[in-house]
Length: 334
Figure (cartoon, rainbow, N blue to C red):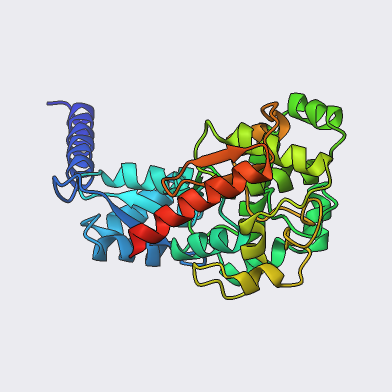
C-alpha cells in the first residue's frame, strides 16, 4: 500500500474513533425524563456550573462538558437562572438550553380583589421577589410617575391575572408587568366610557374595587354598580363594609358596630362619596360593571347569606329584607 494511502486511512480511523468517542460522551447520563429545577446562580465560573451539573447527576463527564463548551466558544455565554433539566437530556442539549437562556418560569395567579399586601405576600411565598421592596415600590412616587400615573399608591392598578416570572424577578419588573397588563385591559374604549361618565380612571377603579369586594357573582355586579351610582348621584353614603374593613389594621373577620364609627376617609358609613382610592385590585368584570351599571331604582342591598343579595328601592323594603335575612342567619348560628 502506498504511503499516502496509509496516512489517509489512519486519518479516517482517527476521525471515526473521535466521532464514536463524541457520540459516547454525548449520551444522556440516564433515561429518566423526570425534570428538576436547577438553579445556576449569577457569578459562577463555568467549571463550577459543570461541577454542579455533575453532582446533580445531569452529566457524567465534567471535563467533556467543559471542553465542548470551550470549543463552541460558549463557556462564557451561560445565562444565570433556574432551568428545568432531566437526566435523559444529552450534554449538548443542556448546554444549548443554558446558553439560550431557556429559563424556567413560575406560574403565579393573582386573584381578583387582592390588595397590594396580599399580592406581596403571594409573590414572597413563591419566592419570586422581596416582599418589603415590592410594598415600598408600590408607593414610590418616582416609580409611579415613571408609569405615567399621578396617584399615591398603585392599589387598583396591579391587574389580577395569571403571570409567568423567573425566580427571582425584581419587584419593579413585576410591578411594570402588572400595570402594563392593566392598561391592556383598560382599553381606549373604556377610557372613552370613563370620560362619558365624567369620572377619572382612579374613581372608576375605586368604585370597581368596592364592587369586587361586595359580590363575587358576575350577574350581580352591574346591579350593585347601579345601586352605588344611584347613591353617589343622590349624595347617600355608600355604606360599604369592605371599605371600612380596608381601613382597619387588625380585622379579625367580624365587623362590629364600633368599626362603623372609626374615623377614616375609607369609612363610607360616615363619609359621603367614594373613598380616596381603590381598596383592592379589581378584575375586568368589576371594572366593566363600574362603567356600565344596570339602570335601576334600587338604592339598598343586603346579603342573603348564600353569596347573593336582596335589592330594595325603599328603606322600608330594605329593613324588611335585613330583618328576614339577619334573623335567618341568627337561626342558622344557634
